[in-house]
Length: 234
Image 1 (cartoon, rainbow, N blue to C red):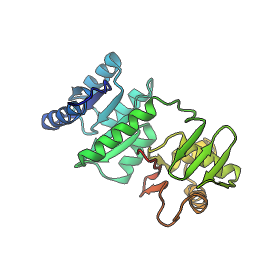
Image 2: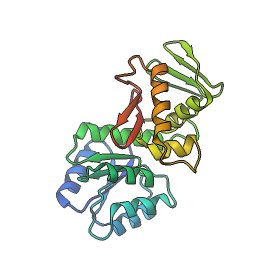
Image 3: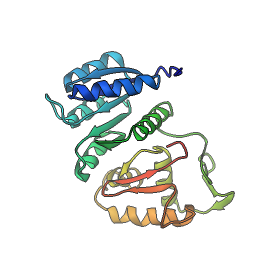
Image 4: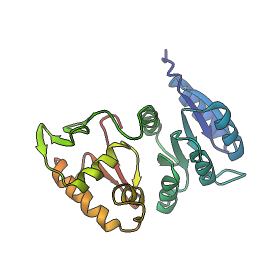
């Protein structure tokens, strides 16, 4: 018997077959599910029902899903996971820069979808500004209060910029962070296109934190989109 999680998920897609399939899959996992076939219906349900997470298709009949993301983000931090046939890098980057939390290209595996949902729900209950006082995943441990970083119990020295970049990842674990997001969070709002800065510092962090910098365990690349800090549960 499935244990009821009580988390409420709003699924937005204009294909009835997909809505039925996702309702069945999610209900079996114990989630409460509501569905919408248009952007306006989705926004109305979001405002009235306050879901814990939104699964959103971009190809809606009345408005583009990007507009739904913008409208939700104007007043809510509800996690949004995009489910779309659009697999172009520009679409992924635009959706994430607008405020989507994750992006899956159709067709996708059920196990991956459920993992992304669990990650989104976990992060929704944590304050944006900070994870726990001590962040841990694998051999990596970061004491956010004292700004100390350890790998396998050994202290690692980071420069102020390296630490700021690592902290930006920690504040959004398992979430794809576009180059622009990271540049603006670490270097300031006037930055956005200087991706070479970011690539240099990610490489430095990998050399200091990863067991194998060429095959990263923690700071992984989403090609053409950005980076993700992968945790043990992500």
